[in-house]
Image (cartoon, rainbow, N blue to C red):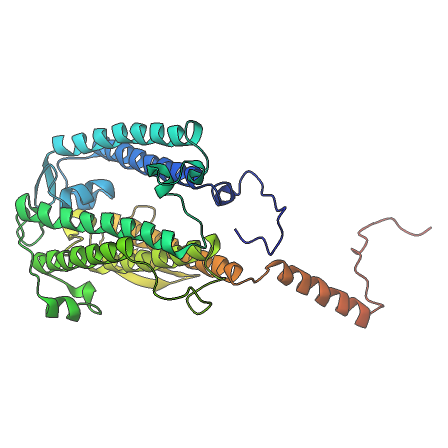
Length: 368
C-alpha cells in the first residue's frame, strides 16, 4: 500500500488490503476464503431459485439469474426454455456448498497453521517458491503465468464440454453438441462486432483461440524473465501493490462493461427464453438498461436486466478504483485535495474579513 515514504503507517481493521500487503501467506489465505464465499453464494442461490422455480413457465419469464446459466450449459434437462429435469442443477448446488466448506477450511489452515509470510520458509521449499514481493518483476511474472494457465484451462474445459456434452441452442430449443469453428479471420473480424455473434460454433472457436493464446502466454510468463535491466521505463519505482491492484481493477472494469453490453443485446449466448428479451439503453440520472419485454416492469425485472445493470455499475466503480489506486501508485496524495479546499476557504475569508461564518440566530425573543 502507498505509504508516501513513511515507515510507521498503520491501518484500521476495516482496511482489509493492508493486512495482506506484505504477507504472502495471508494473501493466499484471503484468496482461498474469497473463493469459498463465491462457491457458497453460487450454491445457495441455485437452491434458492430451484425452490421457487415454476415448471409451467419458461425460465426467462421468472427473473432468475443462476438457473439460466446452468441451463445454457445444458445442465439438467431443458427444452424450449423449460427445465424438464432439475437433478443436475441440484447436484451442482450441493457440490458448490461442499467445496465452499473445503475452501473455508483451507483459508483457516493458511491463516492459523502456516506462516504469514511464505518467505520465512527455507529457500527452495515449495511454499517459498510462491513467496513474492510487489516490486519483484521476476516473481510477479511467474505468478501471472499460473493465472493465465488456469484461465486457459477454463476455456479448454468449456470448449470440450460443448463438444462432447453440448450446450443450449436457442434456435432449436434443445441442448446439442457444438464443434468449434477455429477460423482466425472470423475471430479477428469479431473483435469489434462481437455483440452480433449468432453462431455457437463461432463462439466456441473464439474460446478455442483464447485457450491457445492464454496457454501460450502462461508458458511464456512462467519460464521467462523480463529482458535486460529493470529500468524506470519498464516500471521500476512504479511496480507496487497499489499499481498491481490498479491494473487488476482496470481489467475487471473492462470485462464487466463487455459482459453488461453482451448480456443486454446478444440472444445467442443469452437466449430470450432463458433471460428475457433484449434491453434498451436509457438515461435518467445515469445510464441504465431497461426491459422491453411486457412481462417485466416496475419492480419486476428480467435476468437480463439484473445482469446488465449490475455488471455495468460494477464496472463503473471498478474503473474509479483503478484511477484511485493508479494515482496513489504514481505518488499522488489525495490529502492534498482536502488541503486545497481548506486553503481556498482561508483565502476567501482573508479577502472578505467582514463576512460572517457563524450561523444566523433563529431566536424569536422580542426586545423589551
